[in-house]
Image 1 (cartoon, rainbow, N blue to C red):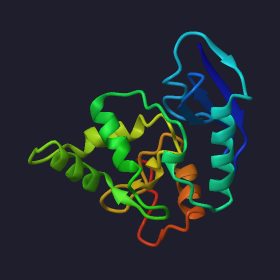
Image 2 (cartoon, one colour):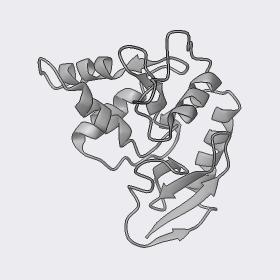
Image 3 (tube, rainbow, N blue to C red):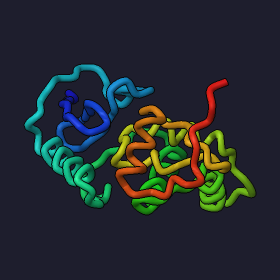
Length: 176
């Protein structure tokens, strides 16, 4: 049995998922891959200790504090490659950004490869099941473009502004 609850936030309603012990998902309403780690029978149960801890974490984050992802009981459901990328996301400092290319270089180095596709890394970043907590919003295009956020570009910009990131050289690409 898996469980969910919702929580209001400055970027919209958030849905949290749990297996009863661990947090397995956090999605922004309307996000791509919404609910992707929830399986069969899912029941609403907002009073689980893991949900209470996650809600407290989120309140602290939106208040401008810098809670770390490793302070929550997380269970990341994904391939070994995806988990490798998600672990690297947790290493991006609060209020800073990195590029898909930089992440690809780090993954290639860890895997003892000469190179790694930025698109493959982007796919893993996009499937991050714990938005905000695993900070995929801190990844931008190599040219400074604010692309690739499953929760929407406006949400990505809001989160980066909240963190005090320097947005001077970043831009939202024009739609084609």
